[in-house]
Image (cartoon, rainbow, N blue to C red):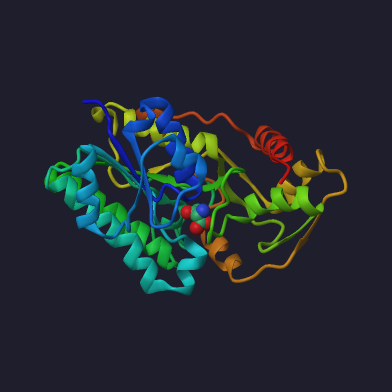
Length: 316
Ligand code: AKB
């Protein structure tokens, strides 16, 4: 069946670029963007847009019926750092939005769901290097707890009700078009903006904090590739480990200096350091590579060239 897609959280960091790519692939009118806030002009002018609170099942159902939607990408979420400041609100948004769309699939209103998980499912007791798919998951953040619980809800709805829900454990996603908000890995986006605007950056993580990361283009491709994979190739219904690159603030700063030689980085770790320290430094994603042929394209060098060129062109 031809996909008619609803993107919940389309104005966010991943939603913005994923929606544009889905519109190119499936046709503008077949991808309905939605968010709790108003969209930017590019999104409004390129296809349908609806204001939706992702926890409001009745409104989602109304829109699903209005456009005859059969797939939902649920990207609305509160990320790790903000969630620590408002745990109840984070839990409410992250869990109730997922349960709403899972129920709509169980009730046969939609056929396929994408829901992002995160490396935040892991915690301080997880093996940090090359973290395997199946390992200890004892997260120390509210965001991480919501992602572990969410993964098991996905698995449960798949096992019990045959719901086709697919998920990836995203590393830190790095983009230049839309800034992320409230994450622990956000420094790796902010650093590029500040490098271009001010040739300096004060980093909220320490210089040797290594974290798994990925350029947005790879993240969007992985998401669509998983959603288009043959159902028999999707063997994991919790969340797939997904990886591309890993680096420290010091290493990304060195790469930026190759383009902006007078760039200076200083370090002033805050509460986000503890979150970063609880997460893996690298991820083993061999299951994704084996099951549906995942391959990343961008390393740190290529990503840095691409971001700096684009930000300079945009004249930020
Ligand atoms: C965050 O930092 O909270 C997110 C994530 C790793 O899920 N970018």
